[in-house]
Picture 1: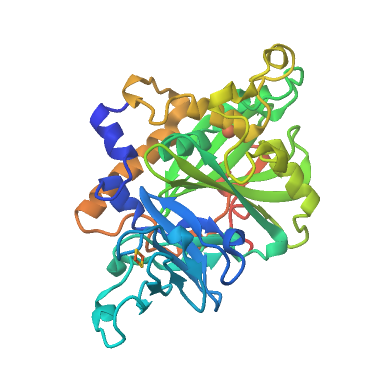
Picture 2 (picture 1 turned 90 degrees about the vertical axis):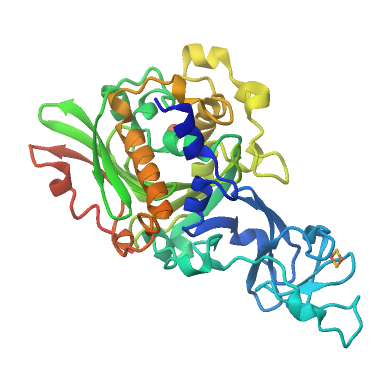
Length: 423
Ligand code: FES
Ligand SMILES: [Fe+2]
């Protein structure tokens, strides 16, 4: 449980809030590269940490992320002309480059020096892993570029998508790092008691702080000295990695993968969830077919989105199309799609969950650790220190893993090699 004040502190992300300032110390996904694939193509709207922006790719292929409103009289830059290395406001023709400099001001006399005094707010961007990352903080605090292992895999071995969620980022993040819920909410075959996560529904949790966040493991005893260990990585401020090396019954998968989410706050009530999958080995690229199957199982198949948006058709307004007969006979929730099931419980809490009403148990250890870490990072920023995970190389070197272990060697030892980045 959190006090109302602490809940407010951890969930408010707009300009001038403490959590907003913390998020502004990290590189964050702004759009998928594919959304602005063409030079001089249409700009797209971006809302990030409560700020309205537009992203575009200029004639030279450089990406810009600018204020959504023109500095002249605030016309929407979404309607702008993207031409000859800049975005030109359609109201009076003022034009800005990716750095936010005014490069043409045709509504003023040719000898005017006004142009030198005008610019539009612009944020630095970097492209990697099919994602355009942005830094919204003070330039003096610019951290090294994102260096997670999955960003180094070739395109053939990695995919990424995104989904819009009507919930505060912390709700989504807490759902993602809650390993216990998969025994329940994601049980899509009530008749199958051999499923690894059904054989033991009360994993023990080990949480270990690191220089980038923490790593933690859900440890399920399978009897006779055998344990099923899922080891995860949590990166500040809002990214998690998990491994899918085994199938539901514990057999090795044909294509072992690393998977993850980044929960990017759009504002206090909305989150853009970036979903990525990366092959764990160079031998196994991610085929189109496998990616389609993965997205479909998650509830993000092509037909699952409201056309032209990143919002799922199954959403809170229609109770996620819950099928009570399916729930009675076949699946735990009666809701189709693994991540749709997550959205149902997370959005159903209300856009900003009131954590003063909750009762945490032993299964919530990783969630408690994440909250503590975020709180400490708020203090770091307030005291002028660099927050956790902004100046470490260690995050390059790690990956998540899962395995069935025999004997008494601790998982940290037994899985040491599995937990090291291979890309
Ligand atoms: S409002 Fe954009 S040029 Fe005038
Ligand atoms: Fe889940």
